[in-house]
Image (cartoon, rainbow, N blue to C red):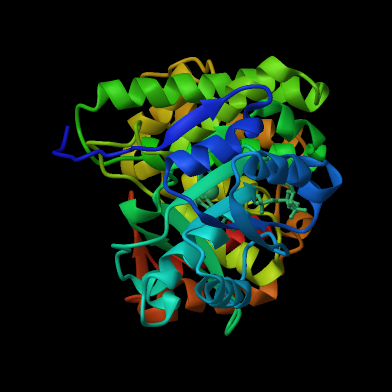
Length: 392
Ligand code: NZQ
Ligand code: ZN
């Protein structure tokens, strides 16, 4: 196990009706004037936004609103949000929605405390300072409710990049599984896929002797394999939604990723797809993961065989571990298909002829060195072959 530091001070309020605590929690973490940030309207239609405003009113808190965050959140609205916060002297940002809303809120919160262009953070500058953030989560997926990360799409070129810093870890996150019951099945499945991707990206490590985090990741993957189909079959299954919601947080606040190197090549490869085709991040990952894993499997075939046996129940073939490894990747792919995810470029809406452009932005865009590196180093030829696997 490698040395690590881990600091995860988010206060979680989990369970039914917890959104009624929003005012008390915002006050507790120092809010006086709040920006309520939300998406394309689901929180308006569900009545959640009204309930949140009531909770703030009852604590005498002042607020302004900014809706309109799109999935794969855009830089333009972030600039608007920064201007609004400065003008209105906002001192707290409350995200009501999914990962896109939370990430946009994080970008605004960091941008308000910074004299330069907020995009500097998405070009590699660490976020040292930000307004405090609270979240009320409406979809189990990105894990942004407990993470120090944010992903934004730059509209000037339509490419997607991440930023990080402990300053943007939410001060509190309200997790009420009931709020996710209004999700369309497709979005639920995208979320399940993303959570599993966050676990796999951590599982694929070059660090040795990391049994505790290996076992925790396997437990969370097993939970997803059990609960995923239950919630697709019955969207009102509160207990399944609750288990998925907490697994989604655990998958990405890095409690199960400490002390080990991690991958993230699949996320980088996918981000080019959701940036270019505006597909859901989870749907892009369903197509990306099996292709990447097939391509890199031989780098550490035993690791793939291990997850195949421990999570997917495959029989270990000691003479031919690559057979077991492949069976595990196939099981993952079939699982994604079974919950309604796309299986190739065509179903995702991506185009084979765009591969050279995708590879160029992925490997060279925004100052990248001509390759990406995680579990393995992937140059442009490797990335081309991986995208081709998805296209065929
Ligand atoms: O905009 P509204 O109307 O709210 O609709 C949203 C949106 O269309 C809808 N939705 C959310 N909750 C709902 C609901 N519809 C009905 N009922 C509800 N309860 O779902 C759609 C997708 O929402 P979005 O926020 O985009 O989903 P998700 O949470 O998957 O976030 C995806 C974004 O997170 C980034 C992704 O790249 C993508 O941009 N990621 C962020 C990470 C982080 N900050 O740590 C890590 C992840 O790996 C990921 O990259
Ligand atoms: Zn993700």
